[in-house]
Amino acid sequence: MKDARIPGVLIVLAASVAMIGCGKKEEPKAAAPAPAPAAAPAPAPKPEMVVKIGHVAPLTGPIAHLGKDNENGARLAVDDANAKKLEIDGKVVKFELLGEDDQADPKTGTVVAQKLVDAKVAGVVGHLNSGTTIPASAIYNQAGLPQISPSATNPKYTQQGFNTTFRVMANDIQQGSVVGSYAVKDMGAKKVAIIDDRTAYGQGLADEVEKAAKAAGANIVAREFTTDKATDFKAILTKIKAKNPDVIFLGGMDAIGGPMLKQIKELGIKAKFTTGDGGCSPELIKLAGAASEGVICTQAGLPVDKLPNGQKFVEDFTKKYGQIQIYSPYSYDAVMVLVDAMKRANSADPVKYLPEVGKTSYDGVTGKVEFDEKGDIKNGAITVFEIKDGKLVTLKSEGGTVAAAAAPAAAPAAAPEAKK
Image 1 (spheres, rainbow, N blue to C red):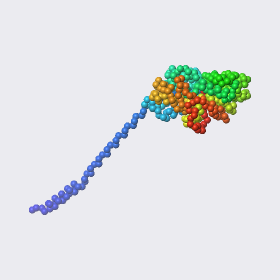
Image 2: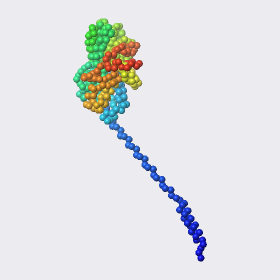
Image 3: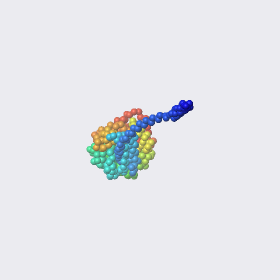
Image 4: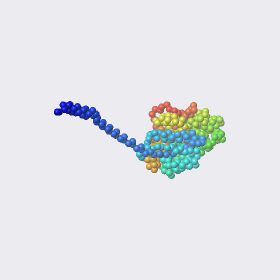
């Protein structure tokens, strides 16, 4: 007899199997995320190159204020050049300034010149004084190093036949001609007394002033000399007083001009006083005080505040270093001329870029910088100043390629120039 329950059992079993099969259904695994693309490798930094530029000026002694002024102008130029991240020969250049103190002494000047040669500088800005610049130039020439002076104005510097010597301001032949002529034609001098400090600068400029004054019709009634370290001038001033000159000219720096002016006043000498760029500075006014009033002086260049790029330089320099003395704008341009020549040559090797220095046509702080075949600046300007109310006031300018530049803005008092 068949068991009637079997079909039911089978149905139950089949249902159970079906339930088991439907109970836990596996979900499909999610696809793994695609790997992020690899970051592009950072470009390799460009190689760097350090280029050393030498600077020499007296940083100690009575005209250290002028030497430091020059050095600060060069340092500002180096900072500005580095801010541009210039590339030469595929490398980013970092310029370094190596500053040396020649103490305004010719022997020390040659020692530090050799020191810079040994340090492998690419070029030199300096020296300040003609008396140190000229002997040092032979050392730089032998090493094939470009040398640009921002302040040495004795003509002999560029008359030696060296292809390494340049200057960014007018020389003493140009300046002496203006001073001598101005003394006679504008100051009314018929009798002129001349004093110089026996340095290459002071004596050289005095010689040119004497020539120009004579040519203009004046009589040179006295020619005296002192030293660049002297402080007592009463003996020579007493001799000059007896000659009763209309004008006294000093070929020397502000360090002796200031005390000399005081002694001229003490001795009751009525002659007008004039001097060259070495004495045409705020320091002369500081040293002489009221005795500087009415002094006529010249600078081998144009007033910085009258130059297209001068205003920014004055602002940047005074913010960083204080008052401009004389030659810092020219020192700034001297550095920039070297840098510009390196860029054009695509090399900081003096052998390769030296030829480019002579081809320079650079719009600098001090105006257009171009050199003649000797290395002198073309169209060098001379400016005549008068000291009024303790300030240097521009009277006239001669020469220069930017003398008629755009309408002058009110600018800080022009910085004087200093000399060797």
